[in-house]
Image 1 (cartoon, rainbow, N blue to C red):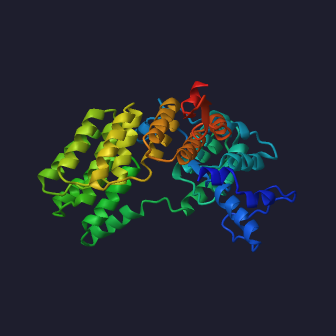
Image 2 (tube, rainbow, N blue to C red):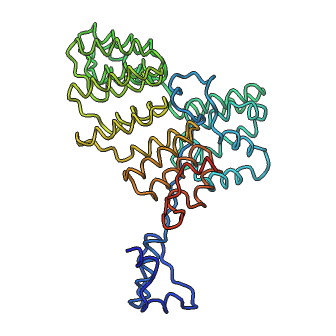
Image 3 (cartoon, rainbow, N blue to C red):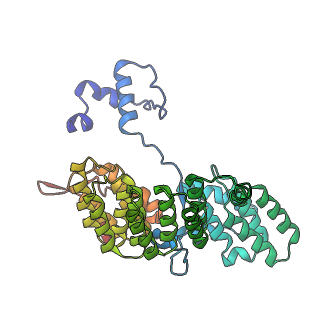
Length: 422
């Protein structure tokens, strides 16, 4: 097969060396009707030489997401993209076009949390016009919607400079987006008119309060639900446990987790996933692993999301080999997460642990878990998304991972670890 790819048969050699330029085919398009031999060559080029551009990725303001849910941003490292985007906010007439070109070049899109973080930066806070233009530009991204923090950050900028007209305008737009507690208004209406509220409505409210970080109100709703004779189901328990875990109240989350079992409510794989993620977030690795074993012993089949939570936590704890071992143990159970290695490489690069990512990539290829070309593509995208564009370009323009070095009669694949060692 190798000879066929690299050495065309003699009856094709004359055609391959024609002076006229080769015919090309559009990606995804139909192959033009040509002569039999020329058509074969065009199909060959189309299949083996085309490369599709990956879709733009949403980027976050922090490189290590292991502690973001705790809402304590003081000890987090800003993503390298933050400084580069702020540098482009120079107030010039070409500011928007420069932002477009930069994002198009590196295939990125700015997430709502990224935009709100930039709006809170010292550089942008000093210039309300730049903040306004950046806010408008960000809102024009495809499939993008400003979050509450973005509106609040922009209002803070205008308030600091006494621009009351713009404050009023932004606040009007803010209210038009319907960021209102209409659910609680409906709850009060039901209470006043003796309308029964079911567990599903309670779980939705508890989940909403949890996402806003208002855990005390979520707990009150949960207790109110119990007192009114509405037995909480697994959705209600999961919503409360998730709210507690994401607000760094993991011990309280574990208490609710045990209460769930005592009251005979089924603990689902999602329940275990929430607790495991919360334990890793608090750096309680061994407890998370023990809980994983409990889940397996109970006969609960882990999902791809459950293993993702486990593998990401182990990778950030420096236990990459343990994650790979557990992945091997899942195969006989019929659980084969397709994106497991991709998730692990992404989180290692995002956390700035490129050396460990390269070591993992070599292990994946050496054990035949994945073909070198796909691992290389995953690593390039992971480096790019983490803001490490220099290493991504270096890997893309080298033979690392897919090329071979010849030592006499022995050919050895160029290891990924060369990327950080050279």
